[in-house]
Length: 355
Picture 1 (spheres, rainbow, N blue to C red):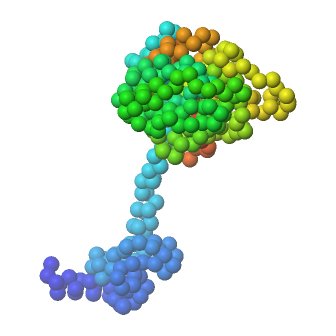
Picture 2: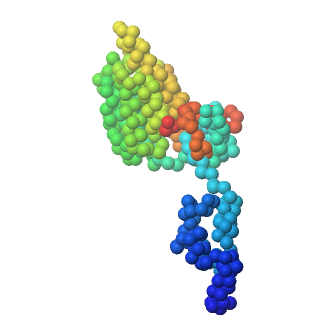
Picture 3: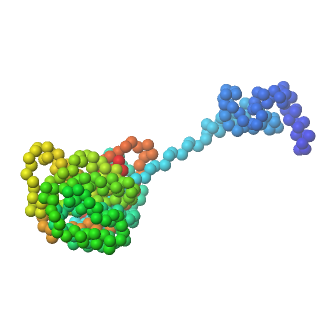
């Protein structure tokens, strides 16, 4: 149809409805074709056809708004917000202590506060570790040989720092991937002046986890090696445990149960027994459970090398378990990771890391 013919037809349609073009524009959609939501009851605040196009199509304004309303009512529902993903590092070992390395996502189950979570991915952990080694040996040098072998086993897999607890915590070497530098620092842990009245291991654990949180380490690990004795840190147990969870650090403890290495000082005040020592005992006991590590008590110093060797093998064979969390799930703390393989031991956090 030619332009004059189209105009003539539009005019005849408007005339048939008894309405002029100006009246149609004032009642319908203003210039620019944007219909305000408050113009007419039921009108939609969205882009609309200009009046002349409606007239050209032979449609009324009410018909056009009806189409828009129908489209809005029948639009597909908005997509649900995506689920969040959380990841935890776990270890699975045989009864002999040898790592289990052939598990898949189908072998794991995860719950938070008793609510099942979908396991979306399980893979061998490959991110480099940040390992802080805290040595509380009362100047005996007992851990030196085992530690040198330990850091050699982690070569290329971790950045390692070493601190001693001789009264207060003193850093020997900061985080580095240079095994030679770490080994040289460990080699200085020969016989030294003792601190028979105890140390501040609890403070050392607290500060190490704060440092790892500050560094935003992807796989933070704290290893506490101690000969026992009195604790002189005033940090409460709950504060240290909360900090471990915030930093996502995994705590491992190797403790030699031999009072001759650091004689126990007589308790003269009940506050001492109910305070510092109980706080340390709580952290060394609950810390490994909550973070997915372990605590090993050794009677003889000959077990140090074997304990550290097994720890290195376990760290190198860890899994990272990723699971989905509802987009609006409330804050949770209790975490349970299980595996359907029989005759194996699973080590995983019992408290949601990062909380």
